[in-house]
Image (tube, rainbow, N blue to C red; front, top):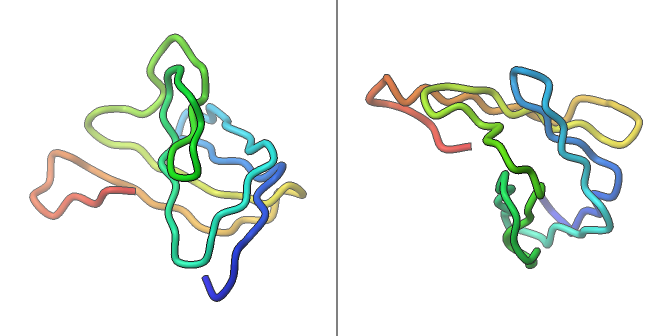
Length: 88
């Protein structure tokens, strides 16, 4: 990214269509954010969904990012059964 991006209302979904919707959050230029399934205190680098059960599959899944109106932005898939697996 060439500049910070406000992600309020943007959504991340997995292959089973579990949704996480960003509240007021700005992703800084060149920064990343980790979205965790469980409970915790949100920071500028880690956000929590507040769920009691796992969402992301351990062996493989796909994360898809969409804007608040639903426009596709990016996706990433991982497959831990392969040596060249990706971390999304």
